[in-house]
Amino acid sequence: MPMPPTAASTGAIPPAHRPRARTRGLPIAWTTARAAKVPEITAVFWLVKVLTTGMGEAASDYLGETSLVLGGLVGVGSLVGALAWQLRAREYSAVRYWTAVSAVAVFGTMTADITHVVTGLSYAVTTAAWAVVVAVLFTAWWRVEGTLSIHDVDSTRRELFYWATVLATFALGTAAGDLTGLALGWGFLPSGLLFGAAMVVPLVAWRLGLSPVAAFWSAYVLTRPFGASFADWLGKPAHVGGGVGLGDGPVTLAALVAIAALVGVLAVTRADVQRADVQRADVQRGERVPAEEGAA
Image: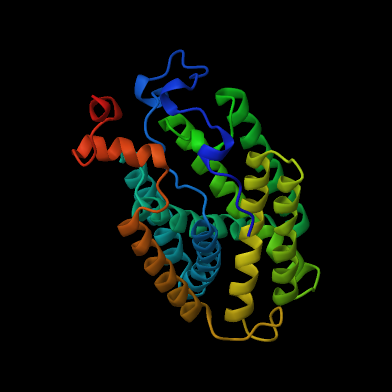
């Protein structure tokens, strides 16, 4: 899967030295630089991301089929709780972060499905509409902060931009996957293979000189219909997009187990913590001597 460079390899500016844009009238805490609360981009990041997309698709469908009211309560409740937990954190935590992503995955799917069902708009129209929403968020984020790099998500305001964009990309991916898998009649497996092949494009483009930030977000958006298409293929019956028929419940459970196992490993090893943040956290805990003292 596409793996744009790390902060070190791209020469990302350390949080303490990054300019803070458009801060007038806002609480200091919203714009103060601190440790980044998003993970380093690794192969495991992409694997867990794909698993959350599939889990979100299957879980949303399962809850909706069980009870629309229950599904709505779980979707909204988990989103609010997970994001509040994540936003209150002072530094990156794999458990907090991926809990928030999982909640966003479920709610993003619900949002896209509700947009289609309630408005009666076609999947083509809802896909285009969510694409516009994503574009607007990226534009606003860039105009306010001057960066879209996840290595620069180091203030509350930037984190809010980040999570709003992530939510919109999940909704966009859901609509796009339903467009190809159902509306266009391609079926879920061919759709999944198509989006999987499309994910190679940002990697090749990055190798040829595309901005790492553009490559990352392009791949990030494509992971949603990729994972969701395979989840639908496994969970839905044959007469719905050519599914295998395992059921949305079992697919949700299997994905949750896999996510929990991988996140557990990341939480223990801290392999996905951005290096500068590891050093800062270790110093604060007394687990590492600051460089100035160590050199003395």
